[in-house]
View 1 (spheres, rainbow, N blue to C red):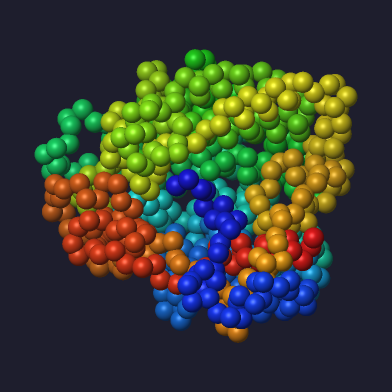
View 2 (view 1 turned 90 degrees about the vertical axis):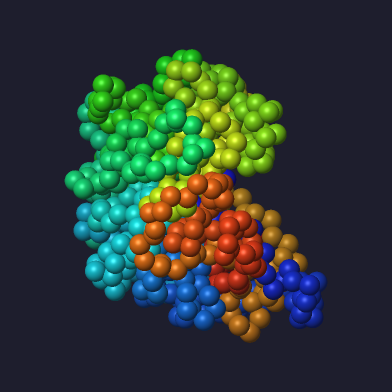
Length: 592
């Protein structure tokens, strides 16, 4: 996927009704004239109240709902009683509600944000972090969901087993903890204090101590002894499958590797810095500095001076601690170009935070490595899924060749993932290529290296690592916050929202009090255990879903070309992503 899941809530969602050919006269008239502040505030209140009172379950949310609430989805189909912690789920809505309160001062939004925050307090695990999903119907209901819907999502291996521990993946724990922090700071509400302290202790306890991995974090914590270490490789495989492909989880159980995927380390650093600045917790500077050193330490030697999605936290299989590691069966052992780009940008932030030029020392090596492994023109031309991409996602250790991931079969039982050097027929659900902007990285590096000692000292003085109270940014949902947004007196410019845009959103809300938007994905219902009968075709290789037993989400407009699938229009849903995006626009318009 090009966008991270937490970025969905920032998408410039255009409501379906407002874009339809049969746009109503009222919508047209409102969009053509500037709405009054009172009209915008009234619309925001109605939208928030509807979502809070009619859509949420005890203040919690998933991602998408049919208008009659008969079906709902998070990353997979969800029970009505579920709370999805992954953005753009429950924390994302809570941040949007609190932002609306900051823009308007209206207590309606604060009460809705508090109810959502209390849902997260209830969903918080005793260890202090959060799982991807919580079920208010109880653990038995959640385990049943994992055994049925989760276990049959072919491409969603993280949902195929219930471990009962917490995850740092997809910024779920980070975004939930940030919301709890914001709600506590709002009025020092004791209902959030204990939860906040548990979250801080969780982040600190999960951090690796000692050795090469010191300062990093695993994907999940605490360790679960029954974690999957390998995926099945069917005895009966397609006749067309080459004999020399690699497959499986190359480094076994991956949840205890040092994890950079989805910027796990960066998100935890951000949360700890927020706590330092607002709670007078100077002792958190040590864990932050250890984390920054971990990222720098795990950069690989030249000429392949990049990072992987994960790195071994301890020596294993004859390989040293700190070596790049594989994870899920479609994440081979390799360097990752997009992760390297993210980590270089983190090094830029760490220099700004500390004034220590050592964080910049090896940046040129990382950029040089990225310049050494672009996609070829032939690769892009022969694979439409690589359009707009500059680099392969995975680059083989040693040879510096691109590694491409594929799959065969039709479901989680008769299918499997494999990888080789063939750039054709790659996965659609996990991009084989990435857009990496080395020119931008080089320009930022040159800019930072040119700063005078006085300019560096000014950055260091305004850094949250310098100590002293620094208030949090006023808004969290308008865009992804960077570490530099946490600096003292950091500007947070509002996105430009025209009167016509605001008026169109108000008019589209109408008297139904919610926005409708085409859903991004639908799912097959759980049908029981999938067949093990081998499938020799290739219809599912580059699709988001397999046969009808696969519960993975997919775009109904472009299903597999295999009966009984037929292209269908996207149904209209109440979307938390659309709510966050639309409310963010109205917040920006109101606060300008």
